[in-house]
Image (cartoon, rainbow, N blue to C red; front, side, top):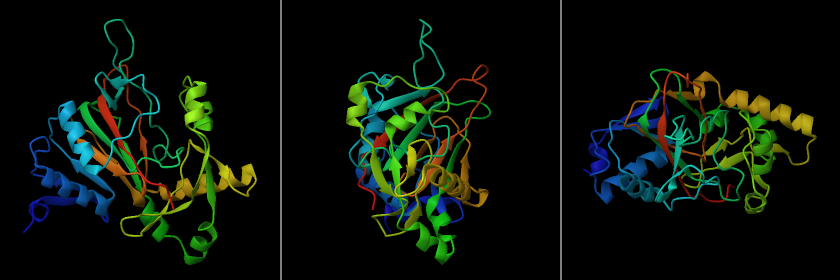
Length: 285
């Protein structure tokens, strides 16, 4: 029996995601880390609670999934650890924010504005609000499977226009400063609406908001109406898992087959501190 077979694995919701119990990630061997990656690859998301992770521990575990990815915005990366990005509403002694606040609000998949979007996003929670601030994951494969065959055939050839500049100009909580260098490094890209997972060939209804500017060959009004319709379909309750954070949670999801969104909390009453990391991905097909 392998270590993976001995792990206690529970689905996050029927047919999607896995919570693994009984493992100390920081002290686990490289072989155990690989078993956890294998579980992740099969389930689309992985949750491990009750962990105590140093930045070095996080980087070691993250690297089991692949090559860590740089962050597009670097202002709030952890000193000495450029691959770890701080999500927080806390401020330092001078009153300056220590992390990004309101990032991740709105259904999307991370870094879809690049030719090779990130494979997975990993969050490690240190401080969490007592209420609110949940993370929601939508299973895009289950949504695709639920489509009638005729609808799948209609959607299969469609190509989405993704744009980082569009994202920055239309951010829900205000535009972020963007330099010409960042624009140059993140030109517009085009990705399929129906994405194939490279691990096993399963199909995902890979729609998104924020970065999506349009659909190739379609008028803007028609395209955005279709995008809104499909996002609403993918994010029905039957396809969505809501994660309520606890300190010490590690949650990582597969951006190739999910959408996600953060949710708001009372940031005058509560504080949040979370580390975010990315792993390099491949070109969607």
